Length: 96
Image 1 (cartoon, rainbow, N blue to C red):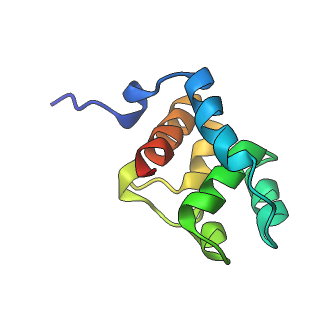
Image 2 (image 1 turned 180 degrees about the horizontal axis):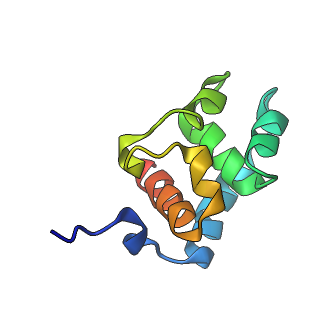
């Protein structure tokens, strides 16, 4: 069977940047810089994850655990492949 992958629903970089920029305007928290560093300097991705996952240390934990919405990939593993990064972005956009 050929299943559709989540990344096939990606609306494009412009839609992602428009969505993520909403979270990018939020003030930094104590874990923001740590999250940005863990996500290879991707500020918009880090702030989006931080604000969707809630405060505290949870966003740092969330990026390191397997996620069924990502076909059991860890969000941090999605940074190194464009299709997986699109999959992560779609997942985040659908969580809102």
